[in-house]
Image (cartoon, rainbow, N blue to C red):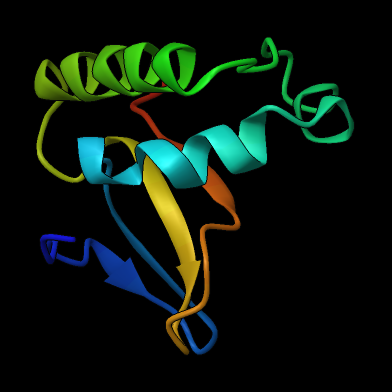
Length: 92
């Protein structure tokens, strides 16, 4: 897996841009109905669907100012993907 730049860190978490290297982790997490029911998404039933979803996220982020967009969230201890965070500009 290619190292990606960290966007920010907290005491327990780090956020970094999405990568197609995250396909398996996205599929593992977002195929679970108990996860996607809380975020209004659709379950990623196959690895190919997860890869397409990641392409969508990466393309969407390309149009946002630096530091904004959706980011992969990991524990700082190097554990597996735990979710996503979205930072966006709000009107006004």
